[in-house]
Image (cartoon, rainbow, N blue to C red; front, side, top):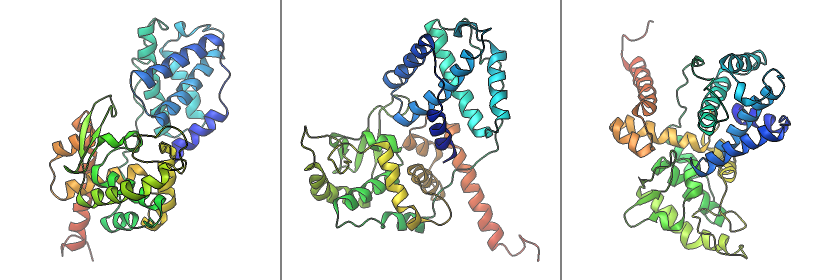
Length: 323
């Protein structure tokens, strides 16, 4: 995806920071990992964005230190990026990263005031979540070869993601003790925002997990010559499957599922929410299932279902379209 590509490019061309700024960056990243329990890919994205901003600060001698950064410097930084033909979505993400960083830096005494206050949000084109149709979901879930341990793992993983709507990072963090297959539910510990919650599984997901746990996971775990790993999903070395490993699994099966769009773990999350609402689920219940802190975050899916309803109306009503 575009943002991941830019993160990789930024990491490859990261500015060389002086020791003081490097220490500030290190402190912020530690805060994200330890206090905010941010996922590894989230920390990488913040690192690229803030490293880029601190590189900008270090090239302006009139600043000298981070303590003197003001609103006009933030605006100038964003203007420079805009001239570099960054997309609005990337600029908006960088500004969000800066706001989080500056709030932290102000509390730590690195700033005399928050320079992002008063910087207007970057207006973006509204993008609706992209999701799979039901037949595409079924094609994806049936793609793995369940005669192999990797295939059993992949099917169990994708069935779980579609059944529960959890994030890829939350699936990565799942331990065996978090599964309650008798009651068809899982415990999400320290999810996004540091909150615990329960998520639910359907019969298909439970059956896929039972097969994987009884066979495929045991065979994968046998490759681990060290201490047993408590993770639900293991790689070929018997260790916890990484976020990146989960994304590679989707890359392997995405063409089997859809020719319309690239399938990612988040595509299944979008599909989960959309299909629930299309079948009459309450928006507040979907918010809880997704683990959203605010209802407004979940409301984007009502636009998706409205678009679907409109499409059905225009296709079926005899006077909806001109001859």
